[in-house]
Length: 395
Ligand code: NIG
Ligand code: FE
Image (tube, rainbow, N blue to C red; front, side):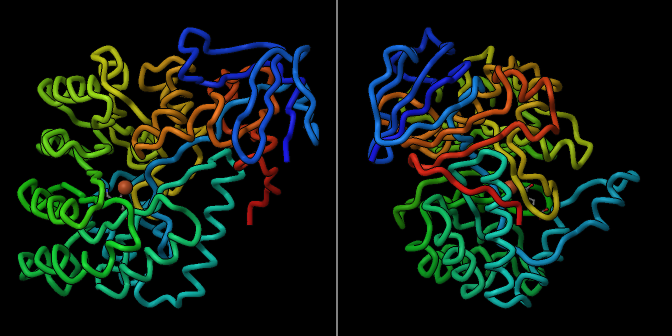
């Protein structure tokens, strides 16, 4: 089964074999058996079983959202409103969602998760990482990961999101549980392990123990660090060669040097920036320019969750990267696609070179720069996952 997408006004493929050619005009693309099989000029396109007319729109790889927390119940709109009136964000709000999530039925969690995933897809996200972290008991964390596994291969065990209320007076016992029975039960349902390093969550030493336990259980590592202060989490992530260190809002010069050195390795640690969090918490935006100029591998992701940011919009994250963080439109698009793929240690998504999965977004715009130029406008008009045209629905 093959599909020819032609009449592409502008193609951004991020083809690793053509790094010097970021865009192509009057292009066409053939997807066969779910993978990109041919890329070139419209006039020389081969025949295929079906044809999809891009109507002169720009075509980009599907977004790779490498950071989300979508298995939860209830919202925290009150907390958001208070924040807009000046109350600072703190990790403590996570416990509110933990209580609501534990009380919810499997069906409630599943239907909410599926709605949120459909919304991401409708905004062009074709690869989505989803974390646990609002259960914080063995059974509730396993439940979250099983639900997430039904919708993505990119699942992350985040038992170390915060110390739950019942362990408030014995955090060591909670870290023991995470590294012991909880990890043992969750490992088979997860690809990654993650820890939230923060004054209100876990210390660098606790994180090291938890991440190493996860590594021993054959999980790859990711870290939340530097959200509210420079906390030492970046150097831990680089030391352990975690796939990604996420937030990076507050960084020291040493952190930047370590990340840049790591990026010189084939498989290093990516700095994943989450500007929708800064939008929703009124924190300063991370300095993407500083990182890019130093040679750091940068990704943009949504961090959609009910607390620090409830937007799943990769186009808006990209627009903030351009408007607030010193990224060029092309750098921001690269960070939201192949950067996210690198943060997930995937080389088959995030680009449209021959052999990549046929994850394609067709824009209702002639130029990819419209994603930043026309923020908030629904420019994603068609989405294909592995070459299959996805019927978009928002609920
Ligand atoms: O990535 N920082 C830790 N976890 C989420 C926030 C979760 C919440 O507030 O519920 C984040 O921002
Ligand atoms: Fe997060």
